[in-house]
View 1 (tube, protein in one colour):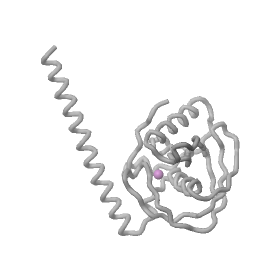
View 2 (tube, rainbow, N blue to C red):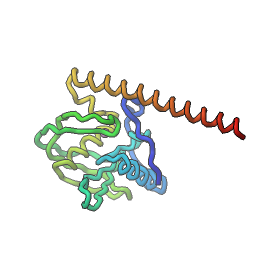
View 3 (tube, rainbow, N blue to C red):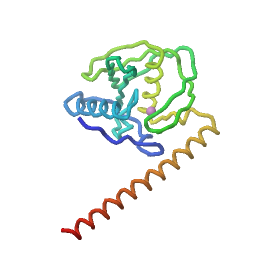
Length: 191
Ligand code: NI
């Protein structure tokens, strides 16, 4: 298992729609394990394959966020939301928008049909955080992001905040590289 890097907005790969999962073999099992490890390390309640640069129609969710709650990892491959009922506003975050919280309109209750990690088809009707997470992650599979659901002003503010963050991150990683190369040349001097 390995923690994979999570892509941050505005990375263009987040906009690539996922292809259907057809092979539930060892490579797919490893992908699911890596996704779970990546999600728990973040930590987050959901992660879609496109968020780690894998354009496949699969996401995972674990809404057991309490410290004493046993984990409740669910895999949704080739999901289809077949029914949506009522609407609510929900304060959402996204691992691809670090630090951001935005109120997004969602259905309160959904019915979803999907395949589990072994390709077994199941149907689930749910509400609450799980229903929200399913809709949020399902959007990722279409290349849709929570920013798309905001009004013009909030969309612009979030876009700017994320660009600023991306610039700062790039600067920080550059100075880390610089430090590492300084360190290397110091070592080379010593050797
Ligand atoms: Ni997300």
